[in-house]
Length: 127
Image (cartoon, rainbow, N blue to C red; front, side, top):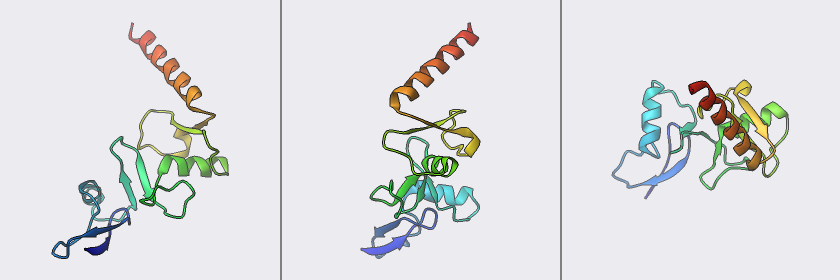
């Protein structure tokens, strides 16, 4: 196997010696093409969340990827997130990681309560 580094997200990966080995996944190849061949260092997971390759971050997965909304939240509040803190996208768009769209909540129960309240508001508007 040949060692490669993804041109889009910089994740190391292995491929057969006969392969070119530019991308770690089809998703990264697609993102790279959508960005006109500019290395963004980002990828999108199956749930629609943006991930960034930062292997030295305290929350990085074994792949070295960290959720961008959690990085933005840490920068916004000026400290690492505590265990149990949840990051909420105010406009429900998982790829909108602007600081003004990010909110840190104390736990999953508060996050679930917030979403239940939002669903009730949407239902009341739809009636």
